[in-house]
Figure 1 (cartoon, rainbow over the protein chains, first blue to last red):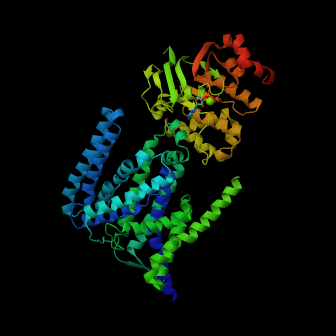
Figure 2: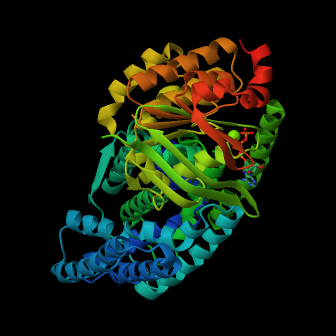
Figure 3: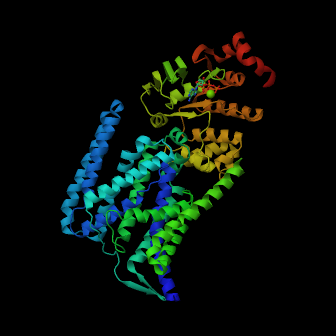
Length: 346
Length: 242
Ligand SMILES: Nc1ncnc2c1ncn2[C@@H]1O[C@H](COP(=O)(O)OP(=O)(O)OP(=O)(O)O)[C@@H](O)[C@H]1O
Ligand SMILES: [Mg+2]
């Protein structure tokens, strides 16, 4: 291996690592706000990529219909579950938000899609379709058991993962797709050649991470989300609507997931079940950070990406094995570190 | 705008089998301080939690002439009710300043600067510690932060659950001084206290709770002179507190 190949592998690793960082950071975020270890985060990425692919080919994406199905389900389930305290105002909100808006969106998308909309419009439509799915998944699966243990929530998350894979298969079919790059072409930079899409990924990741940091450190809503995670009762006592915070976290997760999907869609082929492996790599990074630190997650995710890309070069058959084997030493290391903390507290 | 700001009629609340609050009726006039005193386990904290909506309860609850019994905690906060709970419920891994900022959540960002200024004037110690993480504050500082956070929401009625709990006598004095100042600033106050002597001293009106029920109520100065109260609640305090 010469230095050109090494630099190339490094570049490749960093770019994949950037995507893992986005997914890992989202896992940390959802865990902090809702205590859910959201295994299916990658499904939002797959749905994002597949939605964009449908729009590019002029077809109405499966997510448009899926949104209607989940919206109606959430409205019906919540009406039955909370029939005792249901008021006309809430029913009205649900009728508009969960039924009328998804149907309107379906109509709009199915009119626009055949015209093969411009890329920016397709990305916007993709977000409009995938982001509302986040809160819907939260309401259907997690809100009723919001106070359960981390383990119960984790088991529910695994159930949701299988449900989402199944829905993906129904609404998108088994075929894999590849998106158009946002910026085609290759740019030389010193000894390296950068694909336009790689630059887009790096820039978008940096911008998203900066936006998240700003949101949580400096905006009132971001602080309110953190406060809810730290002390739910305290948050309610200052008037934070804690029911809404879980939904906001899942909306953010769906947004970041969908964007990552649209970003990687041109680098690799995505099908209904591709999300899991991608988000597992983000998961390795999140575990390295103890599901707590955003910066450590980002660094670890880039490490995972680089390791994977070198592993692919030297032992391509084992690249996933090598990456996932990392989890074991990481867990041992974490448990040593954590045990240490406990002793200090005593 | 006259008449009581808070009116309870036959409020009851229970934990599974135990009825911790039974048929409590209570009235609090605008701009007054009302105190609820009683032994450990009498149901004082449960009563405040029922008023705030933390604990579900039966009976009639009226705040500012509106029925609030069906409202969620968030909506009661929105209406101007605020509770400093017994366990304080601070955001322990966030800074003092962020805790205070979040106190103004219901008012929105515009109210933060002015609120911070007022709280820091009242509790200069919090200004010194504004960047410190709340979980590392001392007991007294934590208490100041809990009150400061509550004041950030500019409540019409402030409910304090044992604000002097575990504090040095000098700080207790400061806290009661602040309670009096708040009343002068137009805040109505419902005060639950173990320190009955000090509570009766600052309050206008008082209720005595025993085993979940109100057994006595009257003007605070009258109760402070009542032999039964002196024997049950002020006797020991007289020797130690002042
Ligand atoms: N979560 C709970 N589950 C079961 N019983 C409870 C619960 N909280 C309080 N109780 C019981 O309800 C009764 C009233 O409790 P409460 O906390 O209201 O008393 P208090 O007057 O505030 O006492 P203190 O002065 O010690 O704070 C007590 O007997 C207590 O054991
Ligand atoms: Mg109590």
